[in-house]
Amino acid sequence: MPELNPEHIKSVIEAINKGPFFMYMSMRVTELDIGFAKVVMNIAETHMNPFGGLHGGAYASVIDTAAYWSAYCDLPEKHGLVSIDIKIDFLSAVTGQKVIVIGNRIKSGRSIYLAEAKMTDENGKLLGYGTSKLMVTRNKQTINDAVKYVCADKLPCKYTAI
Image (tube, rainbow, N blue to C red; front, side, top):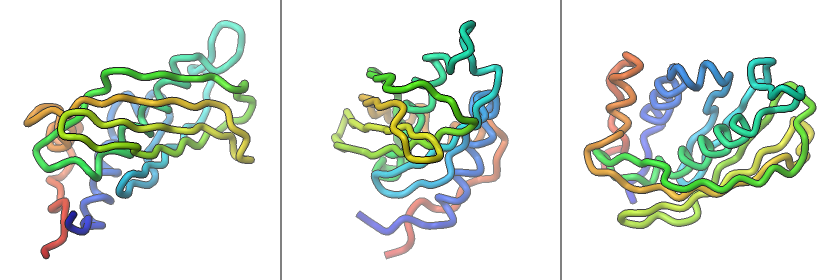
């Protein structure tokens, strides 16, 4: 595989963090690399269920996001991904104001990718775990579609010249 262009990765992170759902959820992708993503979410009152705990949808969203983006760097250009199955295990209540989620790509196939993510608090306590099965799309839901949607600048090339 060719080497990733660091300027592309920096631009991707800036663009996707402008997405309205990411901003609503107070989450941001902070790192991307081959088979890896890091997502940080600041917990707010809008993320709480009626009992005062973090809503299960918030757990699922941030875990699915980290798993999804961990697969991005392996993806051929002009291809996209769609989550087709996620499984989330809630392991502990969120009591802090921030969670950190590390996503790791498990398998990159021609049509299906598999990824996992672990959510911890700022002290490293495991709060949630999940897996995401992703379907590869060709010329649909690509990074360029995301860039257009959030009105970001055109991305530099994904790979450095060989």
